[in-house]
Length: 316
Image (cartoon, rainbow, N blue to C red; front, side):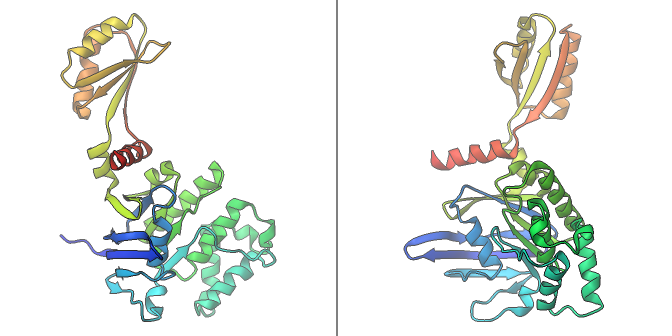
């Protein structure tokens, strides 16, 4: 079954003078996905997002939003209404109230009463700013301002949401609040493309990820497939007694590839190639051998480790 694509690009390229910022990118994002875009500064993420948002014209290539081509020689009014774009530097008007700010953008999208006021109430409730509706923007915290920016981005109820570094500079609580809002939008079947350097957030939110390097999309896959292919598993083990019997038992297991003793502890890290069932079998055999285990914790490489591993492969 062929799934419907919310975003599709073909040979998408952007050149500034002699520098190619985005190089022949073929991007496929399915309807309803949360797609994470990661890569170092200068990899081309922002330029790619700006082209998808029709804020930057491609040098070459094609962009399709929900199957409709975004054309360089047209206003694309219909398509732009399907897109919500939150850049990392969008200005806020400090002297306006929260309500007046959102109403201004609602009017720009030609939302009419009573739908306009209804929509303002909906987005304020979603971003948890109803109690701040009459406050001036200057009095808001950084996290509140970012949630207000998101409310402005979705005021017209877009089908595709493009977020460029939306949690940059936010504290952990503000990031958590922002993540929860994104989850609600995902449940509402909105397609979301989000770039971020906070890979733990993307690992929690995303269904798929793309990795950019020097303008190229070097990897694009579901998060599950990426973990299965590139995430190495290790097991942390701690014993009450001497670690030598534990090490001897582990060395006999064919799926234990490498063993490390963590300095100054009775704790071992065993790299393990087996699946969950094999892991359970290993635990059972260690207990049967009389090893006094106090810890047996299987751990997979996280998204940050995979990203660093891929980056090393690209440069080696």
